[in-house]
Length: 334
Image (cartoon, helix red, strand yellow):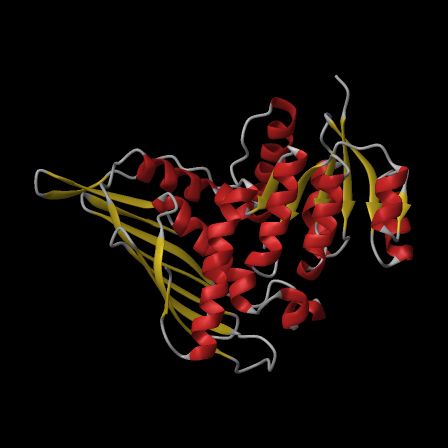
């Protein structure tokens, strides 16, 4: 079988830690070219992973190398331009989260994918955590009944030391664009993307002038359900915390660790599976699952687990979160 030819644009930390090491070991993939504004970095990484072509300019790479897919791991401010160019060249595109800085940019990328009739996937790697996938499967199967409330949070130090990540013009925002969008995605996925009714948010800028370092959000949906989200890079805690508590009419489920409780004959029963996969390197494993899902979707034509079209509702909510925090009031959707 011919190998899937993949181009990578943006060779920062996530590309070097996850994408390049994982893709280079897959038998059905060839990294056909890499691109970065730092020409020397592109050359050295190409040499390290035996990639034939390296470039400073994305246009040159797209015009020079025959490929099937483009993976965009550049700063968020570059996502729209690079993803659209890849799609217009007829490539399937995977964009690492967030898809864009705002709804307008995300919409342009999704429209380009529809016009090109190509796969657009957003790299929401935390959907591929084993406990999250199992939690979602129990919720989707109706095991805890109709979901009416989710309380979720992600409290940790900054994911990257890259300077662009704390500049609003480049990142689109601060901690919510880094961590909040991850758990917003999981909550919406658990609830099967209900229509949003209103958003109320409070952001704090204790450490950075340009972007928020803590964000607290309340979402209300038209079906009456509610989601509470807390994210921070700077809360004074001994340990990081990643959690998602889902409450249904017949039970509840939470991570991390995974717990599932079900109301059976007026008795709360623990129905958590005894054996749960605990990868030695959870972070890398999620990217392995994500990349394999993208590759499988390209090869088979089956939908990916994180289709680009889903990002539009997500980005509408993100825009409203920043609007609410700035205005100091609830934002209501028409």
